[in-house]
Image 1 (cartoon, rainbow, N blue to C red):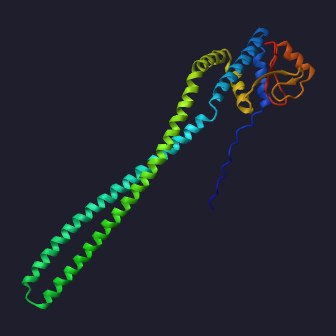
Image 2 (cartoon, helix red, strand yellow):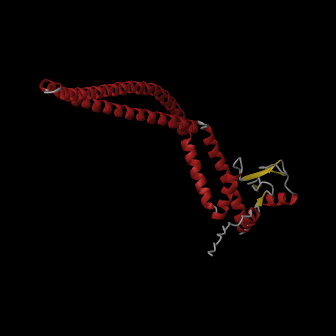
Length: 271
């Protein structure tokens, strides 16, 4: 009897965020000067990110609106192109049916000429039968041509309606793009300077510290990873009360203090 081996899925160990912060705190504890410098750099990095985000927010929903209009215009153009392909197919069918009619007419002329030289009623009936069949084939071809022409007229009407919609979308898109480009242009120099400043500040931090900062910033709704003390005794991120000992640690600037409630880094406003 064959035995089946069950495959066990290896689960990655859960990351203990508190342990990660403990490691980060140890990493900070090189010297008093380095801790203060790192805290100051983190605070300045947060300020730079805040300023960049404010500039991005000036654009509001314009980038999303531009993207939606681009998609809509693209979809309408694709539909119009598909209709053009259908028209080309109908036109090719018309040409094919016309060629078939020419061949049918030639056969009809041939059979009509044969009627002049028949020798018996059996041949007469046979030729008349062929003439009848060719006449039916000609009617079918003419019907196919008529239906194809009607389909072309309908598709052309659809294309005209789409052209009006495309014109409206492109007009709206041009206006939104112009508005967005105006905002981007007016803030581009300031944003470039802030990005350059952010890169310089990031370069001052070790990989573990920068990774922790980005992780915290991306996990909170307002993107504030580094905050100051609020109202003298509360976290500036979640507004929960800070213990007196932690307030002393924050004021000293000699160690990394992380809010036990929200996980944000808390620094002294003296920085």
